[in-house]
Length: 263
Image 1 (cartoon, rainbow, N blue to C red):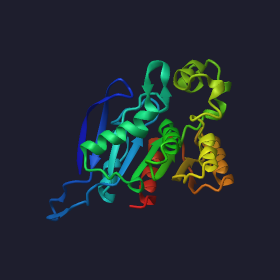
Image 2 (image 1 turned 45 degrees about the vertical axis):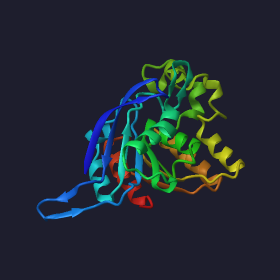
Image 3 (image 1 turned 120 degrees about the horizontal axis):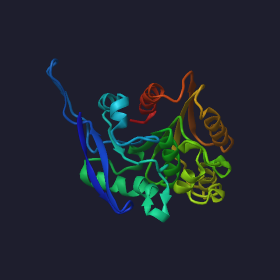
Image 4 (image 1 turned 90 degrees about the horizontal axis):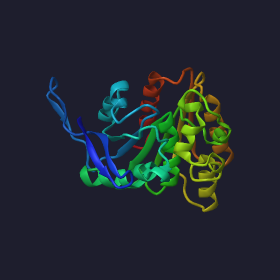
């Protein structure tokens, strides 16, 4: 297993940003005297962190490197700051475009990654789960499967936010990400609208995997979106088990998502 960490210069963000990349290469078992060679180009998971995270947070809090090694899959870990991975036009931070287009193009040019939709996956935890659903649907031609673990599916209620003491209750923070909160519903930042838009255009929807703990503060939002998907006959795999909004739960279901993928 090979781990790269570095910076890339991004047109969509108008600056440099950090990224980590796990490659299933040089899988050598020294004690057994064996070596496994993963077939190139590599199937690839783009994995998005949550609020307060960075490109290295999954490396510190999960066993994603072991999962990648066990399943011979490359994993790209970008830094999305506290952006919700949407396009923020006023500050010229096009995080959606970065995740859905530029990051994929750049990493494919640098590393031996598959260019096929069916080999390219997008997933995330918490804020990253929302970002995976939003960008996986918006850039449906790029990603074959979407994974959302404890997803922060807050778009339905953003217009009701006031000025709270933390980011997930602060209207000004929400506006800095989403712009006019009264216009989020029915836009490309609304995961329900994106589903309906693809159905109306008769476009194939990527397969979706969702997981949430039964004691997660985002449980109701995830159940609501799962029920919405089922009402639209969308192909969705849903997992719910005892758990909270924790790294332990995230780690368990990143593993389950990777095992669910058509690898």
